[in-house]
Length: 80
Image (tube, rainbow, N blue to C red; front, side, top):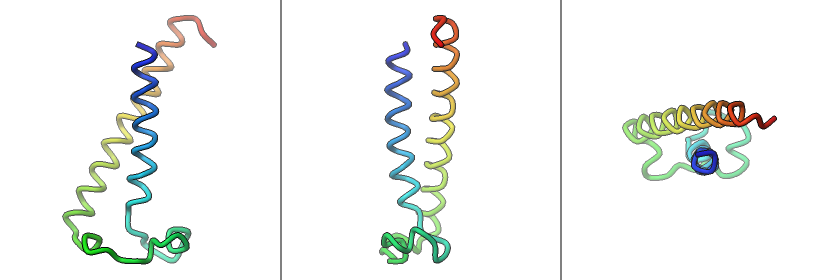
């Protein structure tokens, strides 16, 4: 069970990085330095942005839940 929860945590962590980097930059910050200021053909669509936001939030909830589950599993095993 710990291995499965760890795998979910690793996969959601990587997915969160990708999803956060896929968001369109809202200002002249760090994202513009790495090409965030370049608009793509899908970037202007509010539906795509809304779906990306929902996917990011859902991934974040799964990520957070996997951390809680891992903490409870480790506590019940007496590790740490």
